[in-house]
Each structure stands twice: as C-alpha cells, then as structure tokens.
Amino acid sequence: MPGRAWEAQTSAGNPTIHREGEPAVVGEDRQTLASKLRRLAAWEIRDERDLLLWYEAAKEVNGWLRPPRSVSVPRELWRWLSDADLRHADPEYAKRQDAFIRKYIRELDEEGTGA
Image (tube, rainbow, N blue to C red; front, side, top):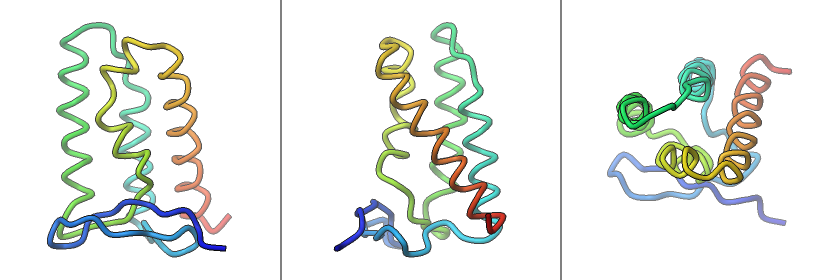
C-alpha cells in the first residue's frame, strides 16, 4: 500500500512527492526544524501586531525549508505556517492545527534521537 504523499519543493522550487516511510528531514535538520517550530508554536498571538510578528518569524522558517535545503515536510506544515490568522479567529481550527504541530514536533524529536 502506498504511503501518504507529502508536499516538498525541488531545488527548482517545484512540488515533489514524499512517501511516508522515506527520509524527509534528516540528521541535525530534524532538531533545527523542531526547535524553530517549537518557538512558533509557543508564540501567543493576542493582537494584530503579534500576528504580523508571528508571520515574519514564519517566513524565516519557510525560507529555511526552501532551496538549497529543499526538505520534504507534510503538506499540513505549509498550511500551519500560513494559517495563524485563521487559528487566531477560529478556536476549533486552532485546536486541530495545534494538535498537528505538537505531533509533528514530537515525531521530529523522536526520530532525531533514534527513539
């Protein structure tokens, strides 16, 4: 049975597919990405200024994920990085996305340590 397809970017910036079970983010990049996402996930957004600052920090993570690194990550991560305004406005949507990001960070940590 084929694994879940994940969106990634090739060095040309074109989408590519990552199959579950294949290496995506590897080595030290796992810990680096987990740290960057953990920092964003802990960010409390109270107002428009916080939201703008969050998006500035998210742009840095987006840039880190793109060429020349071009790591493969779940499609949901791209959505999480672009939906802070929706999470701020919709608590139910925020719960779903928060659950995703906590799980993904945990997976990065576990696989990064060989657990």
